[in-house]
Image 1 (tube, helix red, strand yellow):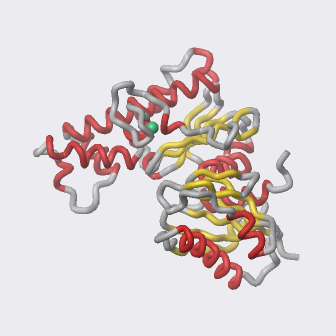
Image 2 (cartoon, helix red, strand yellow):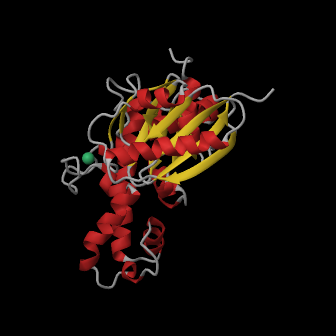
Image 3 (cartoon, helix red, strand yellow):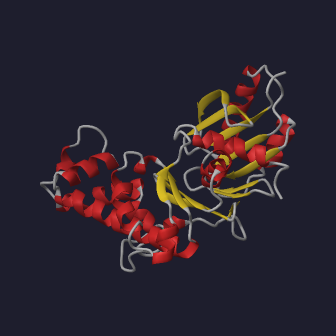
Length: 318
Ligand SMILES: [Zn+2]
């Protein structure tokens, strides 16, 4: 008899990854396609088409359920995609209902970071620990807070917006309207934007002479060579992310910090932040923090695993 599977659908700002995932987190098949993000209608149609194409090629047992991990804000119990900053979703879309009508199986929705944290609970650090922070630093910054073995959602599923913790009261203006949030200072997207903004004042900076598009890795390596602008941007990022994490460790007393996201993948930023997070929290909270580790889930799979995890959690939820 074939193993039971669920379908995971990882919806990013530009791409959709659909796959079949077993209960122990094995991806049996997957397929990637692009989103046509011209309008709400084309966006939702791209998601339906991507799933249809995968299902047509999938000739093995019928999946038990489907989980969708999405960028933006989600109301999981109502199955609503409320809004997305990088896609033209500005009014709630009843995506759960639409997809269960279309495909005839139960559907679960959540945002991509909550989905990744749930995958970390089921297949990663959660197999050993009930108290950890899942930190994601890429284009933006966000966190999944796992306390007493449960993902903290808050009253409307917004909990974990670490990116908007203020770490510099007079710092740069954040798109959210406040000054000095950690996201525009320490996220990959934020650092690149700050370099673009300030480059004009640093005519000798090595960051003018990039052959390819500027990346955070190029900022970090210029900082290692003593480039003034790169040192300034990366030092600000180290300080901002350190303050945010030290506050979080004091507030929540986690056992581990597990991290993912492109900006931390080369280790440069997190190694420098680690030194602060291991020494600056209160004695008792820092002694009970066992470590800061990369997620053991593969970065290119965590979105799909997170989405599939939403489906596996259906019916197992309290
Ligand atoms: Zn903000």
